[in-house]
Length: 509
Image (cartoon, rainbow, N blue to C red; front, side, top):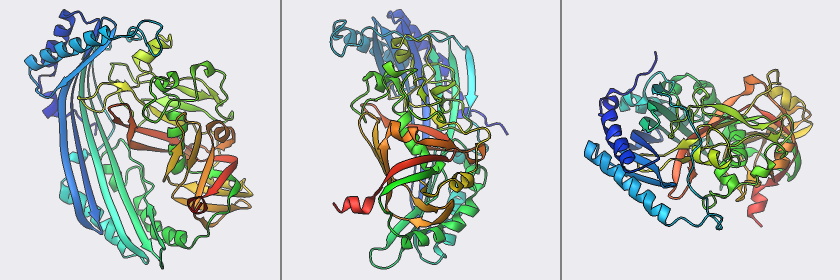
């Protein structure tokens, strides 16, 4: 069944409010104006040892107007959804642009970006788009949600060695109306969901550890928690035994290892070392205060050896069930897919209309997003993913090609420098590989490299059967900070001779 737009949202006077704002901005001399009206509903539910520990359900709504006037940006937002307030918001946005223009540094001055120019985008007329899901989580009674999570928690608590179980789920329904002076008018709705389930075990003094589900957040509905898209029964059955084995596992010996990295871990490495590094505002040096700039500067486009020839990374706003998937971005740009790294060489960037124009490109690839109507759109990450090999090996076959190595599963902590170049990642589960076979778990593992050395050591990627889409609800960027949802798909992958640290030894230094 195809999901429908929320009638309580579409019944609002969307076009009337947009017309009031855009006509006022145009009358005041704006060269460009766009209008957004959003309603974002967010809910969360938490259980501790099968008992409800907390719940929240909030809705944020409002309108926003952004303009280009006298070559400068202006932005304003409001909560009052009336024509009078929409026009007044446009007036405030124009006034902000006038103030920004008066304070603009002279052309050529250090740090001056000059007049705001936007890359072109054809008018798309009136369009509607709804993400792909079957059952809206906001239509599911809380009693049904609690019952499902409590049943799974009790089953885990009955397993030997499990001391505690934490369970929860977060859901978002994002309704967005957009209109601009070029004639694009879009009404869109996105639903996303993030399950959480972790077991805690204790064995002897200080023998405390946890293990979380590997189920990633996704742009699906409640059906995701009842079987569509994830093998819940199989994973939950194995978790207590895996955690017990982890508690007994030996600590890793530091050194050089071949790594087979599971998609449940590799997605985060892609996010930090490729996703952020190929945001063009970072590469230009415009975004530096929050998590730094990028080593992948524009002079390396088409020549920078990012990784081995097995590496193809795409930016994609169209991937099925991707958290960053949409029909049109917050600048009215249609969703697209493109290469960021092709055969190991830097091939592209993530763009909004401003950075595309600065790069001399004719069009953005649709990467503008605002967290809420109170936030200005900025260049945000697409679904950035590592392509599988069409006839590539299975995970077992990748492991079979390793004499001495480690199979890395699940994400945990990470660290990366301000240019997205030197990094260290840990994981949830580590398995020793000996002569092509798994030989029990290890503890205290972290892998460390520079971005280009790590991706340069990529020898093989798995086939489509190993491909999984991970991601995050809350990728942070900007000042004031904004959070954006984003997915990263990847297959299992084999990396040769990667430096491995013992985190327990490092902590004891």
